[in-house]
Image 1 (cartoon, rainbow, N blue to C red):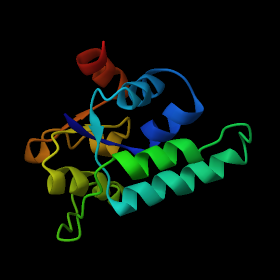
Image 2: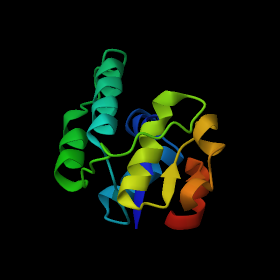
Image 3: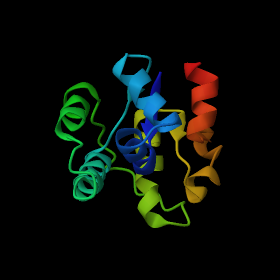
Image 4: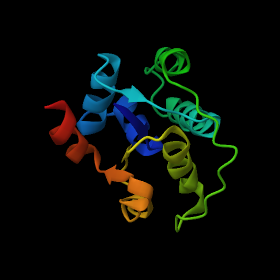
Length: 134
């Protein structure tokens, strides 16, 4: 199974506990595949690097390297969707569309509002954990 992971879920999984951490742990154990675009990976990296200033004891390089090595990098260049109320969130819908991925995991209200668009389900982290991990 492939999923697209919103940046907030990815970052929360690295720096905090709870469902986002459980999602990253399950991914590391090959329970599913995270699909990325270059834009999404760059956003993950930028936000993670900014947070390391606040949490200097957390080394983000290993998880970023795992993503770079093990996650399919999808080109969504042919997609120019403008469907989210927050245009910055369109990249997650574009990634899902370009990769035929049917699940986005996000707590973002703009993405949650689009659940069902092109057959893509947007689940909150806790919902994803309950449905696919436990």
